[in-house]
Length: 184
Image (cartoon, rainbow, N blue to C red):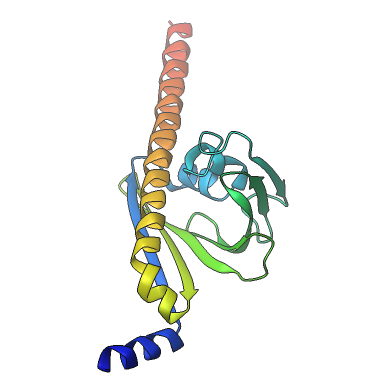
């Protein structure tokens, strides 16, 4: 009887499922920001990309790094969705609403960045309201799946940004050597 009562109470209560994953990237915050604040780059570093769904298509609206910048996608594996930037604090915070399957229900998420000694820490978070019984039955599995996707995306972001940083350092060193050689 107590189990049944607990199940009924759980079914009535909504629960917020939260996921936060963090990654350190050896690059200046401005470079990392250029990737996270522009939805056109997301399919190159998140796990929701052409490799996952080769038939997917993406479209983009608005100016990168501004409120209202958005992306929409559709594909047999990724489904239909939209993300819209809702708050922007340059080089610090990028907040968005995520919508699935043409529905009006928004799921908020965002990335925050901070830099210390040339290393940028990126935290990616997501919150989702779920009915009590659904949360009780599937909440842990859903947060694990989202967490794995975030970890994969942040690892890809680290590789891409650190490669871009290495290219920039090499180009600067090459230019300096050429300048010094020309002055001899």
